[in-house]
Amino acid sequence: MFKYVFICLGFFLLHSDVMEELSWSENYKLNWDDFKGQPNQDTDAVAVTASGITFSYSINKRDDKVYGFKTLVKAFFYPEHSWCKSDQVDKHVLGHEQLHFDITELHARLFRQRIAAIRPHEDLAKTLQDMHNAIDSQLAEMQNTYDLQSEYSINVDGQKKWKDSIAVRLKAVNKFKSKG
Image (cartoon, rainbow, N blue to C red; front, side, top):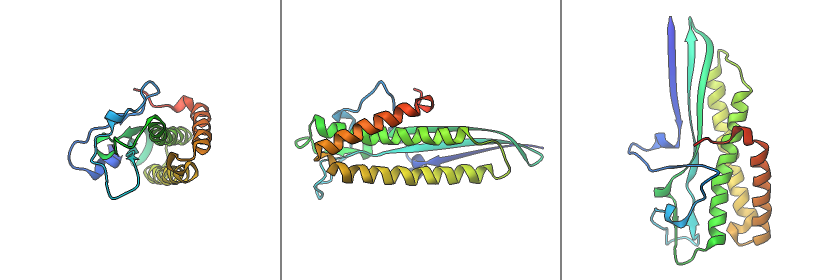
């Protein structure tokens, strides 16, 4: 018997309607027109980036034996859930928000790198789901640490250190970058 299993995981599953999304690309940088959500006036934040990793996979089985799999990992920016207070933002703040998206891409690359190292096995679906959960946790932790250490873009030196660090880390896993 031949079985073909397809699973989709990620942010897009949480929404039943079609959501606008921008794929990460080294050839495209965010601009303030990409931030289409309604600003939250009840916070001191002047901008929020909604980004995340979507993940899907298919597993090929025959007679209950896993013999192959394919995955798709994407880093997305969600314009309708991202917002800015246009009278309070500048190019520096936009750079801070772009780096949040770049951190998302870094984790998509790290996820692809980890996936490339595994081979088909019986518990593959669980392995992939566990890897996805782990990378999502690591992504959230890094996003929070980035905000704290850059003081939400206020600490210019901290912001520069993060920008340089993420550029080096992205380059180290360039082989696994998003395509398209």
